[in-house]
Length: 97
Image 1 (tube, rainbow, N blue to C red):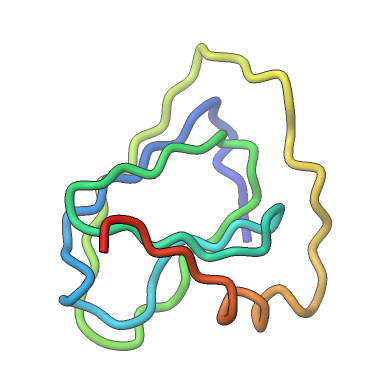
Image 2 (cartoon, rainbow, N blue to C red):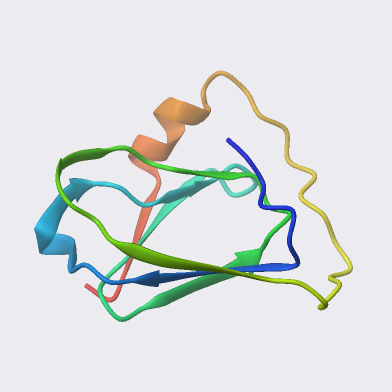
């Protein structure tokens, strides 16, 4: 679990979901894993705590960009707990499927 320390993070999916099993980006504040399909972009504040979910099989390619100079008025105030790992398995949001 980490935060990027930039103002905005951009994740551009280069792989179709059919090329891999698992994956996605888990966000602690919403306790959900976001999975995007090829050609989609996930944009989020760099201050949000998140992690890449393990790939079980196949390959996933992302282009990740970090932007500074756009101060945002909020920070991630969520707290982590030992159940985060189990919760992400049940809270998956698929975009572009």
